[in-house]
Image 1 (tube, helix red, strand yellow):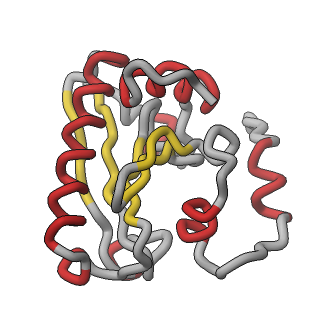
Image 2 (image 1 turned 60 degrees about the vertical axis):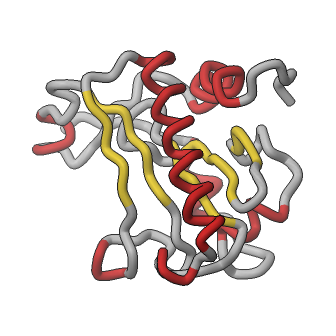
Amino acid sequence: MEHWFTPWRAAYITSERRGSGCLLCDLAASRSDRENLILRRSEHHYILINRYPYSNGHLMVVPYEHRAALADLPVEARAEMMELAAKCERALVRAYQPQGMNVGMNIGKPAGAGVPDHLHLHILPRWSGDTNFMTVVGATRVVPESLDQTYDRLYPLLNPGREKP
């Protein structure tokens, strides 16, 4: 049997959660954007690198408002979410030249939502063959770029003219 070590998960698995009880609300309230992988803040949302990505560049657009359903967001917030998704798409194309893109939401626990009470939109670059035997047989994803590298690659594309934190 082969072993793949993921020491960065240990802190998450063993950590005692403090704060509001909602990971996404706690991230929004924090001002440690780089540490929390927040790439950009807008009026109604923030853009976040998924800490456990399916692929390099797996981003999330997260509303500041704690809402479980898309219909619960104000119209302006829904419009901003789509504008930010388009910005993410453009940045991911420039940074990674993917062959495709997945954009979607898992609304509710039965739909696969990891944070079922706080809506968020996933944007993932995809390539032919990126779901290989490791994912299918080994239930393991291989992500060749560190989260810090992803941050450094995408920050200037989503924040033109701004200095990295």
